[in-house]
Image 1 (tube, rainbow, N blue to C red):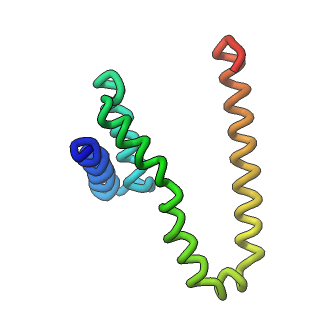
Image 2 (image 1 turned 45 degrees about the vertical axis):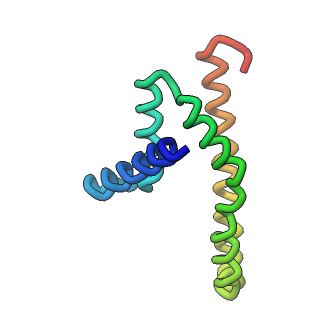
Length: 116
């Protein structure tokens, strides 16, 4: 498990370094995830240890929402002041996500040549 966690954290660190060095407008963990994806493609997929570690981390994914919830409670007055902007951002981003997902699914069905 230690080797798998080290691999995940090194990919995240490499992503952070690349993003800061190249001044990319992308979060470092996203770049690290792309790097991990490329490494997994090159190596033929994840090993058993990485699969087990990833599944364990995904099982505890809900713990990552605790800091966000704490931040909302901490800044509850600001949320109350800017509720309309937050509501609009949530609704518009949800609609945009649904549209992009639908278009992507249509594109995949059209060019994938099968039922998805």
